[in-house]
Image (tube, rainbow, N blue to C red; front, side, top):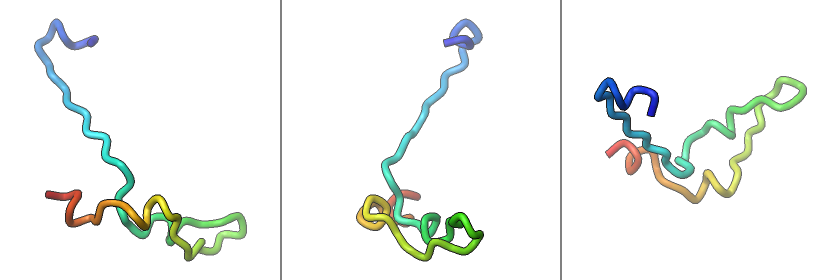
Length: 52
């Protein structure tokens, strides 16, 4: 709203979870990789579907 007077319009796209390897590559407390995927990410949009 702070740029409404400047005629600047912004669109935000907030997708749901996307199936990536971010969780698998996340580091745990000892610095090693987590190597597991959470169910929310596993069962969501593929990267190919999201990028369309």
